[in-house]
Length: 370
Image (cartoon, rainbow, N blue to C red; front, side, top):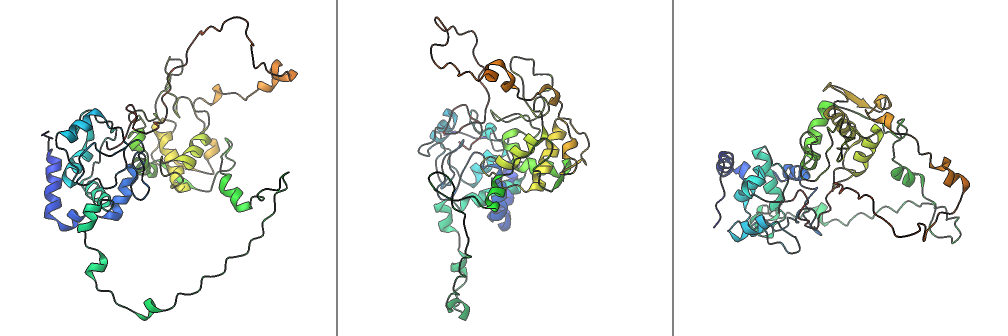
């Protein structure tokens, strides 16, 4: 049987959990918030699928490394074969520092720093475990049902749906309809470098730090240094001439609007569009701070001063002028076959680019309780 080191922090956590009923139960609602750090790699609930890490339904009482359809690391499989079974205590040990408990795990997450976060996360994950849910008392079991007049009253009729007039498509086939203004507005959220399209809002560097920690650090590191193969967000200055440059906000990106638009549209990974506009302003301000573009923790980024912020590499970009090139200017049809006489000679090869991990249990991906 494998032996796993029990740190002083774990021992103290378990002692507190058993000594305090409230701590032992944990706060499910608070645990759901902690799980936001996990969403990039894991799913729970109905229809949960494997991502970078396996789905976490019914994990309590389960031998480590045994979920069907997920490609585990050899270290996690060996841990399961050695006797590692997931329960409140072993999960607590793992979440403090995964790579210390199972050396060789693919889990790139650095660990949870607060004991209450671990207890609350455990309580939340238990709600998705049939074995744990079966022993948990339900509200119906604790309190007898009381039939009231309100409960037995006839349900109120649903209000009639508001009639909407749609404009038919003017296309050749007459299919579909013209999009309504509200639908266009929900889709048309891109931001231009001059600030056009920005929503009203604001956020400071100091406000952005905890939001970044809760939503971004699990993949991008506490200071934007990247975790595993997830993208680096800070640093990289003076690396663009190297064979493998670090293309970050501070070293490569030309416009701040790209940062804001991408965070607003696609982040956090697995929970896109969950951040408020003020949250996005605050995270963007914090990213500027991590890249030394601003140096004041009280700096406030808003729709009013956004366009005045310039990134260091902006001047090295230029407008796309391909239509002025002779080939395009003449309007000549491009050659599509036998364009080069003789055999093709390979003169150079592209580098292997570090991109967002895909999941499906790839051995080289980051993240995941595996």
